[in-house]
Length: 210
Image 1 (cartoon, rainbow, N blue to C red):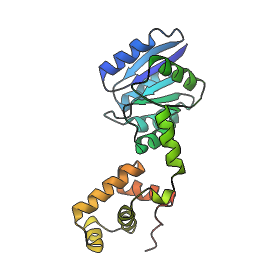
Image 2: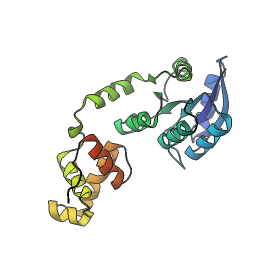
Image 3: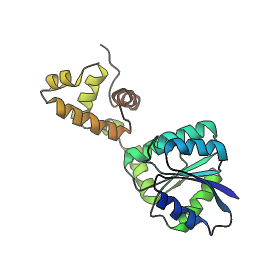
Image 4: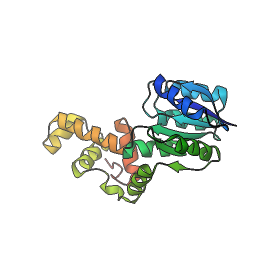
C-alpha cells in the first residue's frame, strides 16, 4: 500500500483528491495538511511514501516544504500538484527535490500513475512542464535576464541602494524596484541577496570586485 499525504490549503481540493484516489486499491491517503509548515509536521509524523504538494500555501510554500521534508526523510517522493507552470515555479520545485510536477487538471489515472512512479523513485512531469523545463535548460543562462535587469542586479552585487542604482542608470527608484522584482521571479528567489547569489552561480553576473 502506497501511503500518501495531501498538502493543499484548499479543503475542497483535498477532498477532491481524496475522492479521486479512493478507488485505487494500492493507494491510501494517510494525512492532510493545509500549509507548508503543517505538511512538514505531518510528513514527520506519518512518514508517507508520497506527498502531493501544492506550491502556493501559507506558512511556508510548497518548494520550501519539499526541501524540509526531503531533508528529514530523503526516501519520500514529492509530487507537486499545482495550477502554476511558470519557469520559476518549476525550477524551484525541481531544485527542492520534487520527483514530479503535475497540473491540477490531471485525470485520475495520470495522478495515480504519478503517485506509483514517485513511490518507486521515478520522475514524472506533465508534458507541458517537461517542455518548459527542457527549454529552460537549453536557454543560454546569460539570456535569462534582460539587459537592464542584469545591470541593476550587478549594481546590487556591488552594494548599491535602489536610489544609488537609479542615479547611476538615470531611472527612477520605482523602476529599479520593478526590475528587481522581475529578476526575482525569473530566478525563483524572493530577496536581493538570494538573487545576487543565484545570478552569480548561473554566470548571469560576475562577483563584485569593489
